[in-house]
Structure formats: structure tokens, C-alpha cells
Image (cartoon, rainbow, N blue to C red; front, side, top):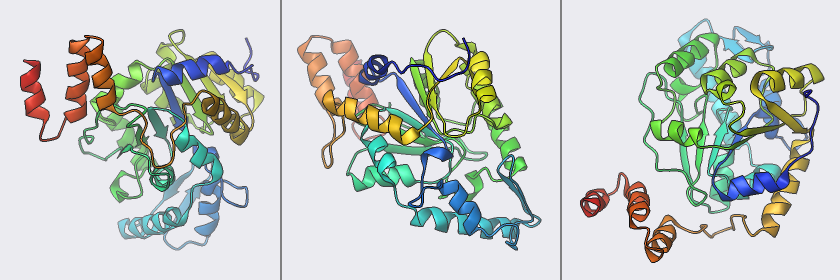
Length: 318
């Protein structure tokens, strides 16, 4: 099979969304400014390269910077943070927030997607890679309490941002040490049966290495991978299929999201503004009603993890 665009199996995607076995990975192409360009392109323009006195060099092919002084890196981080703070979620991002993914990985350092969740009054968890630090604990991600995880750091934490080749080296050291993400997230990713990549930079060598470190290439026949990209060439599509069994399903990200949004709406799966989807407590009640006490207690332990009720539930579990 070639790497050309394939027919979308919508029923399969919807089924895996319902089962909380569908992972979404968002790249820079998914974040579009009002003028139609990506936020990443707008950021580079706003940084006024190559005339920015804080940035010694910008490696366009890899998307990394070079700083000749730590203080200048701090100043550049301030500029980047200010840019993303002013960025507002577009219609496509707001639609993504309403789709019932339980885990969304992002490869950009911004908090535009979390902002969409907040604007729509949805419950969610947020986490990000932290340099030389243990990952923050998370609750088990669900459609009711999804996790947004910034793989390459966050603008809220300058140290975590992967801006240079040295930062990337430190990041991969954390991967090799199995310390780049919470252990619970790693376990959840092993249960995924469908991955959707939207606008991710497959052409970047380090992203291909990240896919390998996540074990994508070792699970070629255990789950299905779909990708939508505006810029992927035929050669890149073929490479991604041969190496990672990634099928490209669309050229236009917004068109794909609009169709998935419509189908989820028809199925009654969309998150609604101001309304949290069926809570974990509702799920516990249903399990108890069915007599499945063991699974009910396990879910209740996940729900109360890190709260004042944690010890009480542990005692209940025996």
C-alpha cells in the first residue's frame, strides 16, 4: 500500500472515541490565525527574525533557535509567551475542544487549546514536560476529565520549553530515562487503539525519533493511525506509512474536524458548553448497579486520587 490519502473509516473513529481508545496529537498546522497562516508562522514573523537582538540564529529547517546568552533566552521566552497569551482559539480549535477525546497531546508550547476548554467551561487536566523534574501526577484521563499534555513543554515554565538543539537533547535524555511524561499517561497510551495526527511535523527528524521512542513503530498492527496534514509530500506520506503505518486521510485539517464534529453531534457525543459530560461518579453508580463492585472501587480510587477522600476509599477497597 502506498502513502497516498485513504478513505476515512468514520465508524471506526467514532467507536474508538466512545471506548476512550482514541488519541489526538496536535501539531502547529492545527493552530491557524485569523489571517489563515499558522500561529507558528505568525510567531516567527513577530519575532522579527533575523533582526531580533535576543536570538543569535534561527534554524528554520528544524524550527530551533540559538542564543549566545542565557539572559537573551529568557527575553525571547518572554516574547514567545506574550505572543501566545494574546492568541485566541479559532473555530477549529473550539470544535476540537468539544470532541470527546480523553487524551490530547500537543507538540506546541502554548495553552491555546486549554483556553478553548476554559471558554467553553469544560473540565480538563493539563500537564507538560518538565526539564530535570518528575512529571506532575494526573488522574486517569476520561472523556469527562480529559488530559491535555504539552509534549515539548509549556510557555508557563520557561525551563521546560524546547527551543534549542540543547533543549531537545535534554528532552530526549528524559525520554530515555522514562521521565518525560507521567507514568499513568504512558500506561493509558498503551491502551490506545486509534491515533489521529493533525498538522504534526512528520518531516522533522526529531519527531520521527519521538514516534519511535513512544513505541509507535513497534505496534504496527495493534492499532490504526490516521493523519491530516496540509504540507506532507507524497514521499513523506509513503515514508510515514512504511515506517509507522500512518495513513493520511485528508489534506485539509479544518474539513476533517468539521466532519468529525458533525458526526459526533449526530451521535450525541459532543461536550456541551457549561455542562460536564457524564461524571466519574455517574460511572461508579452504574457499575455498582450492575454489581461490578471491583471495577467501581478501582474507578473511585482513580477519581479520589490525591484528594482528602483517597485514604477512605483505599480503606473501603481493603
